[in-house]
Length: 78
Image (cartoon, rainbow, N blue to C red; front, side, top):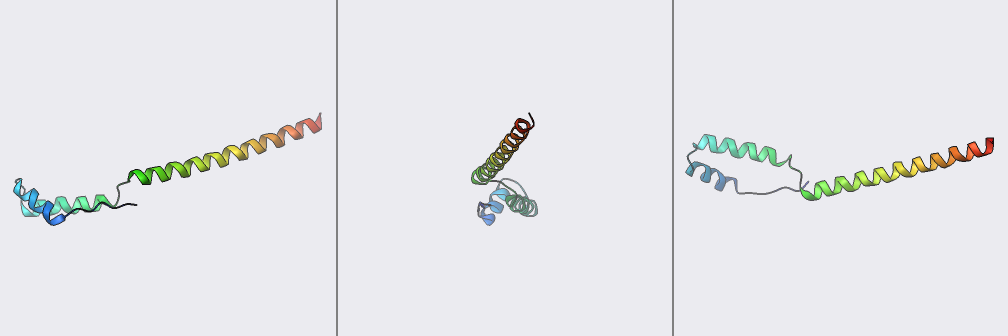
């Protein structure tokens, strides 16, 4: 997963200048850093979609082969 980097010290200073205390600013930055690892990027989503497409194609192919086998078996019985 791709990580997004940002200057935590600068962010703490900016939050402080907007009215938060140092402790509040550091807490906000800590939460952002923790959440950063859980974010999905566009490329992550694209890769997941491609993997799902491959799985769907495999299942459809397998079902088509099974259908052909069932039809062949029915034709033999008749």
